[in-house]
Each structure stands twice: as C-alpha cells, then as structure tokens.
Image 1: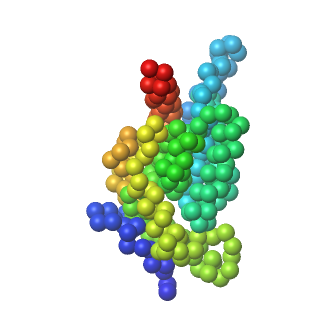
Image 2: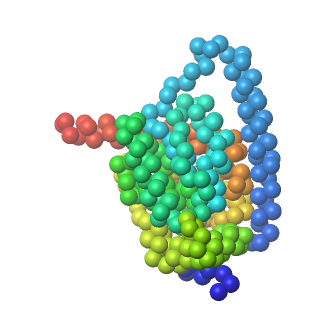
Image 3: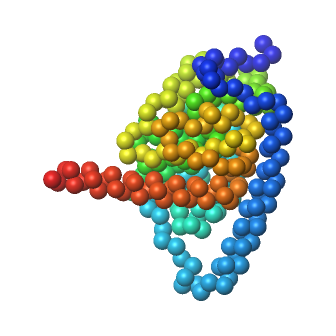
Length: 281
C-alpha cells in the first residue's frame, strides 16, 4: 500500500482537497510574520511612553489553553500566546511537543491537562486551536463542557478532516509507515481509516453543549485545507485574509481571537448568572 487509505467519511460530498498549486499561497506567511514583528515593535514603543501604572490590563477570568496543529508543537503558538498575555489573558501550553500521534491519545492527554488547570484556577478554560488543534478542542468541548467555556478554531477542517492538501497526505503516509515499522507515539492506520478515525470524526459532528462558546476562524486563501470545511453552521464564523500557517502569527487574526475570547467569556458569565437566577427564583 503506497498511501494509507483515508476513510471515505473523512471527505464528505461537497468538500475537496485544495489544488496542488494552492500551497503557493502559504508563502504569504513571511508577510504575516513580518506584520507581527511590526506590530510588536509598535507595542513596545507604546509601552515605553506609557506610565507604569497605566500599563496593567484587567486579568481575564478564564484561562486560555493554546493547542497546536498537525506536526506542530506548542512553540508554533508562542507569538500568539505572548500577545494574549499582553492583553490580560492567562495562557497555558497544551504540552503537545509535536502533534503527530493518535488523535484520541492526544485528546486524552489534553483533557488531563485541562483538568489540572481547572483545579488550579477554579474556573473553566477557553481553548484556541490551530488546524488539527481546533478539532481536538472541539472534541473535548463536546465531551467535557465542565472543563471548557469556549473554543476558537483557526483553519480547522472539522466538517471534512481529509479535505487537505496532498502534501499533508504525504506526511500522514510517512507517519503511518513509521508507526507500522515500530516507531512509537505516531499516527497509525487506524487513526485515518479505522475505529479511531470514526470516533474522532463522530465527536467532531456532535452539537456543542449549551453554555460553550464556539468561534470558527477561516480564510479563503487557505492553501492547506478546504476553507468550507472550517465553518460549521453552529459556529460564529469569522473570515480573515491569511494563509493557513499564518493564522498563528498574523496580528489581524490574533485580534479576532482576542475579541472572540472576550465575547465568549462575557456570554459564559451571563449564562451562569441566568442559571443562578433560575435556581433562586
């Protein structure tokens, strides 16, 4: 078998793999990273000119956990985490060094991570997931709404996980081959064509629980996944102009993440107040 057979249900009718040449659009990540550098330089100048007592921002209530995409690790979201902290958010790493293993195993490990944070902070968390990280975030939010108050996904093809560029298929193929050869901790054939794939996909299609915010950020310039697979009807969709990889560093995208986190946190507080009023009425 030259390539792992991706289960047909991972590519439902109405979705498609991006064209081979679409990956060229990912070259704009250099511009997007440069845009972040310029924004950071401007922010540093602004801080130097602001009295120290005026620099502190109110601390956001809900902690934020950042979840990296396929073949990436926590380091890929370092710049986003830095900006979120500057905006008053308390951020946490997912402890995923490289997102190359079984999706169900990664979800279980992330779930344990969230449990420890919730115990420590005494409040539910919000998840920001890039690509595959967003799919992990959605699955956990469905299973454990007691841990998650909201999620923001960035270019996550939840509706059709196999609607990705052929370069990703080649990467999956390599991981499966290495797993078959005995290398531990890597994605296996069952993760893309067996029961593991089916369970992950089915969870990604379940409705989001009440009281859990859901924002889906997508880009029609995405050269890696079919953008149509990234916008579930139940989500608050936000269109941006960025490459797939660049969503993690483009300050314009990060601004949308900040706004979404604040909006979802406010909605979460409102729902809690309404529930409390209903109980005491």
